[in-house]
Image 1 (cartoon, rainbow, N blue to C red):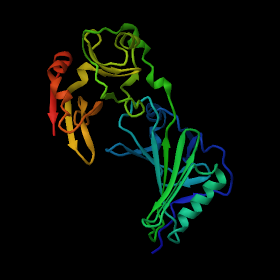
Image 2: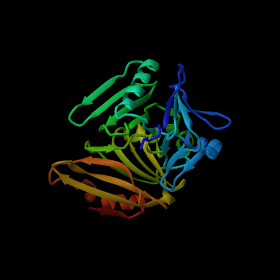
Image 3: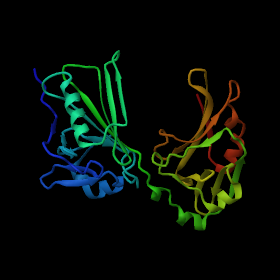
Image 4: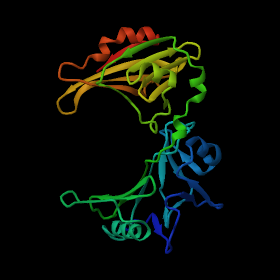
Length: 307
């Protein structure tokens, strides 16, 4: 039985690959790659199919460039997120023969876009992959294994910078340091990927000037903030929204030696947020365990150890 194709290549050039995608509703709606997630929900939720697991599909096919895709999708963790979606996927199935889908899609991308920055072929595993750059986005097309459907995955990954997400001037002007822990430990590293954590901001100048590149944990009783900082970046969490902290140590020659400090937020405390990583040596990964009492004194929350 032939599987119907779930994509269509339009016979025309398109100049908006780098700008966004168009939902093919009765009144077509063009969406920028840069739209904040909260704005997507505020303005366009009626066009979305949202699962309980945070997956988003669209009620209508979506045009990207000169391609119409029936199962274009993305995901989110917080519908109030001020940043944009970081990834979109579309599984494309050709209706006729195994390898035709990848060849057809790849040739179209070569015609529409600049040459790929990376091409990879693994004959042993039947893996075909190429990467195109779209002004801060990577478009990856690949096919793993040649089956009778010719299933091709298209993936858009957003690497663009959004400095506004780091802005922190309102809190910076009024912050107070009620208590603190300061560590001069070069093996500690603060998580700094602000695109994956809305709590990461530019480090307040008061903290940066006073502590430099040392690692500091502080509590602000006046404004109910728990902060972690190192260098030019800081994590800021509402103190009353923190359930507890946890420490997990790893000693495994296959994956490394170290420990992670995580914040568990209410009510989603089963989804801990990694804050600090400690890189250790065999038998020496207990940094956080040695400072648990100091942490608990500052944070006034339990710090639990996990396997």
